[in-house]
Image 1: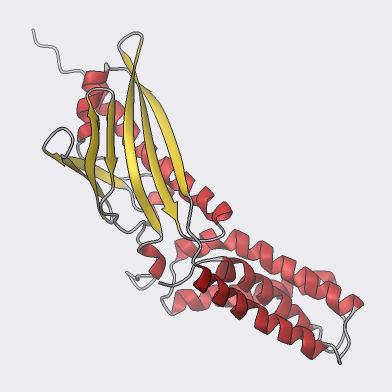
Image 2: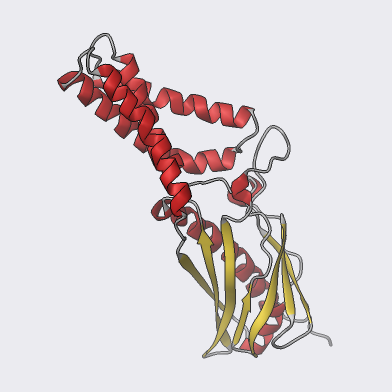
Length: 291
């Protein structure tokens, strides 16, 4: 499996920025603004190449851009400091050699170390003006949700469409159908109308990449973002209302985790709210009055 880790997202942009500045200032010192601009040039070229040769889509490039830009600028700043204080034609080949060796070494170490991702938890909640028994019925399975208006989902991030269930009680299998496929969710806890907890036996792709080629399959679409468990918890509130809490436990094997989990937390929260708001709308509907 391709490694989407520290070597790719940290070492590579840093070294690209550093190496670009060292080459650019090989013959004479350059100014800081010029060095910073040059440090971003190879990053932009790489992004365009990845898009043109159909290795990545627009969404993932945009998500990676903030961390890559900062690191390329840091590499460029170091390159500027080197060419101002230590740069000599005699020392230049040594510094460039260190840069060329550092990144492949980190990639090789990371591939062999195989770091294990942490399990993250995302929780979202909403108050529904309906009693728990009514809300429960909409939680177990829900009808088709209207097409999304959010730019996030319209750009290709997978979004929930409907939920189906075969059977009832522990052992029943729920299918939450997304725009990219279905999450298969065997029920582990069926405490009506308080708690529905399930494992996730199958995960669809987390997104359809936005690309001029119609459809591409980067490695990170399979086996990197994995949902492991989920649950809906219902709490009875005064006035016939219900607090509905949705929770997902997942791992994301893209590094550094401290950066990527903020993206995945945000996306999962938006997915939660799409479902919770739909359940709220369905549960709060009142049957028409007859004379």
